[in-house]
Each structure stands twice: as C-alpha cells, then as structure tokens.
Figure 1 (cartoon, rainbow, N blue to C red):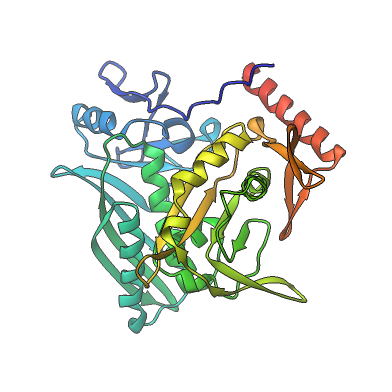
Figure 2: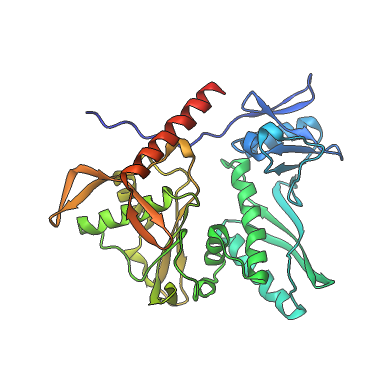
Length: 366
C-alpha cells in the first residue's frame, strides 16, 4: 500500500481591505472587527494565519497602523467586548512593534527589575526580536510591567507574532510566581534560564534526557520517535529536553542538574529528519530549539510539541523492536501518563480513532 502523503503546514492567508464593507478581511472569509476605540481586533482562531506583510498594507489602506487579537473562539467573538490580552501590535517607522502592559500577579522588588529585563531581552533575542522599552513598578503587592519590542514580520503570520507575546507574558509571570507550564518552560530555556527547571519533576508534559540519542543506532532512533509521539498524543503536548539529568525519589524523576552536550551531537536537522521519517502524520508546529550553554561548543536541545488538533491524532510510529530487532512492518501508538511513556491499550487506540473520526465529521459538516 502506498504511504499517504504528509500534510503541509498551513499557508499564510492573504489579507485585504474591503473599502465597500469597511472590513479587513483574512483569507477571503474571516475579518477583523472594531473594538470600542475603533481599532482593528480579531479572533486569533479566525485571523491567525493572516500574512503580516499583507496586514500591514491592509491597515494602511484602512487608515490604521495598530491591531490586536483575542483568544476568544471565533463563533463567540465580539470585537466590542473581547479580551485582547493587554497587548497591541503596530507598524511604525518600518518596524513591527509589540506593546504589552499587564499585572504579573505577584510581587517583584526593585532589585529584581534588571533581572526581569535581562530575562525578557534574552528570550526575545532567541525569537529574533529586540527589546526597546522595559519598565516595572509595584503597587499593593502586585507588579505592573510595560514593555515594547520590535520583531521581523516578513513571511510570518499573525499567530506567530501573537504567541511570542503570549509566551513573553508567561515567562515574566513564571519568573515572579514560579508557575511553570510547557510554554513558560520553553520560554525559560530560550531566555537563558535553564537552571530554573532544576528541581522540577518529569510530568505529563516534561521529559528530560541526560544525553543525546545515538542517531546511528536504529533502536535509539525509534526511542526518540516514541518519546516525541507520546507527547504529541497527550492532551497537553509538551517538551523533551536533552541536557537535563534526573534523579529518582519517592515522588518521581526530579531534574537534578544541567548536563550540556556537544552541539554537533544535537543537530536539530538530523533529529527532525528521523522524526519526519518515523512519525505519521507530521506533528503540527513541531519545533527544535538549540540552547547554547555557557561553555563553548556545548548546549541543550529542546523539542517543542504543541497541543495537536484532535482530528489528526493519534500519531503512529513506524517500526517496533521484536526480539531486539527493528521490524518495519509494525507500528506503535505511544501515550504518556504522568512521567511515563506507555503503549496505548486497545481501548485507548479505539478511543483515539473514534475521536479523530468524530472531529473530522464535525469539521466537514460545519
């Protein structure tokens, strides 16, 4: 049987300004609304794949340079009442500026301000963005942060831009409140704060590996694919970080120390090549991030697995070890429970397939 073709990532959608209707239209069907101040505001679900270059031109024709997005579902979106995350985006002097002003949800004393600014500056640099303004002040045991940064926008979507902002906020909140999620965990890594993960336990979303996989060995390549696919089959997605050693105690596997490895052993392109070959379908939004360590030539590799659409799960791994030999005629459906990777039970396989068929049917009928 011929192998099904992989799905290509979503393409950028054209954005135009409809002068007759007075609307900024994305993809020919979705559009931005107008908030209470008369500025463009769109549901991220509806306008997320819009091209930022096209949006810049459409805004210019509409007599605006600023827009915002909301995470409200498209069917419930009302621009006049939607929540826009205290974040706005504007095209100014050839730059795309993101302006964020929000409460961190915790107390940060004056001595922590330089550390917070350094943290967010390093995170943004890893996302090809430049911090232009940062200010933090505390009122009634809570800290307000205001920041502005510039980002490239060629060949990028509204969603790309929005998630850099969401993660920047999550990173700052995590630094003050100590709350860690997949997004904030990755943000801490990209921000140069790898040691912030030491002390955390492996979980449904976090898998740590002391050393790189031996990609010259087929069993290790299969192990890599199974670990990543298990995260993709979970409800939360997650992170697989190579360069963190764990120590087992009565509560689980705890990250004990940072163990950076040679950068040539964690080449992202080699890892992606094997993941693309062994996992079907292709994992949507899969990203591999190299985090350089203080020592020259050493670093970590973070494999980011976003939450996957229900209609494309489960993810299958081609091949299985039978009597210590890799058999290509088999496949596996790995799942993740707490901090462990397990094979899917027959009931779980049936449930995943049924859920996928139902989601596809609902999408076709909508």
